[in-house]
Amino acid sequence: MDSSVYVFVEDLRGEGVERVLDRISGYGVRGLTVGAAHHASRDVTPHGLSRLTIRHDGAHFAAPHDLFARLRPVPGYLDALDGLRQACTERGLKLHGWTVFLRNLTLGEQHPDVTVRDCFGDRGSLTDLCPAHPDVREYAVALARAVARLGMDSVVAEALHFRPLKPQRSFVPLGPMDAYLFGLCFCDYCMARAADLGVNAEVARDECARIVGGVLDGDPPAQGEVTRAALTAYAGPEVVAYARARSETVTTLVSEVASAVAEEGSRLVFIDSTGAVKGYTDGLPTPGLAAHDAWQLGVDLVALGDLVPAFGVLAYARDAARVADDVGAYLRSVGKDREVRAVLRPGYPDSDSTDRLVAKARGAKAAGASAVDFYAYGLVPHPVLDRIPTALGETP
Ligand SMILES: [Zn+2]
Image 1 (cartoon, rainbow, N blue to C red):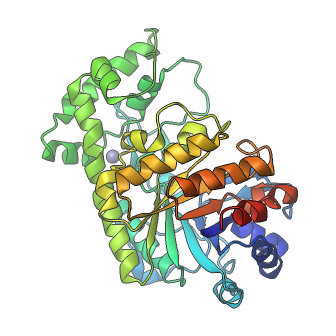
Image 2 (image 1 turned 90 degrees about the horizontal axis):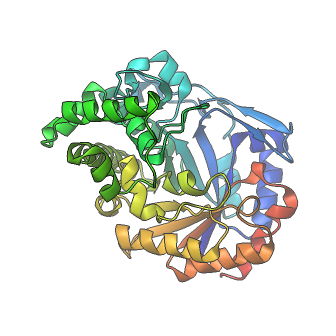
């Protein structure tokens, strides 16, 4: 079974490429998935150079100038990946380039016009670049090419779709459907694309503003999770049609990115964030399977199954049966012949023991996963990482 460990460039800088690779080889994994372009974050790093690591938005390589136009990668640690390809090859490890595409506060602050705009006309999510904006699409394709050119066996795409609303504070009890409507982008490009598909985008926007505005004024929030049926009952068919039209925006973008990556001699692994939205905090995902709810972020897995060779499933769950269910549902959506990789967290909050990790790796394999990836080297104590060899040994 194929496998890899996710690694941050800060891990490589802290411990050194050789030491990290020696450890990872020792786990028996087949490869390394390195954060070539990542988003800003502040993380507890138990065995890092510092115990709190501040990450900046950044591409950790020298980006070729001719590839990029208006939006250019934010320079990160430009030498962080030097020698890594060679060192992986010497150890027989594959190297995958983990790339965060449309989550980038630095670019959003530099170019607010390319970020998402809510139903009230506000740009309050500068972290989220809109996948409908032509400059963003051009940037995404160029970034994918640049990472592929580093000699990556695959380009692992994160945040190559719409993202959910994430305010840092809300003392208004927005229900899941209210938050969803509040998170829909109504920029000119999104509205034009929806209109091209026969959706009345103005009606959809006004309806979202009416509902969310009502809750902000004291109406009771919506109850229950977001489903197509519940959303239709709550917000009407035009809003649902608008939300579904976002899939065309994402599908065409992912298609362009996948083609560009293939032209550069690599392959795209597409990760949608739905599994993280559901289970990131506590490993107790909301009931709907990730594959069934991915449409909410504009991700049409059935359509993408024809365009993308491989998918990563963020199986952020404590329960091995849930991991298997998520992997199975993914394969039914994207097609049985597609490569589906289950991304597992070997420790807190998903795995409290080696046995639990083993059960989840087994569950993923039994459900048809062709690989398991472990997230992530620098975030997890060494004794937890030491569970990986057993998990792989039990699922050869
Ligand atoms: Zn938009």
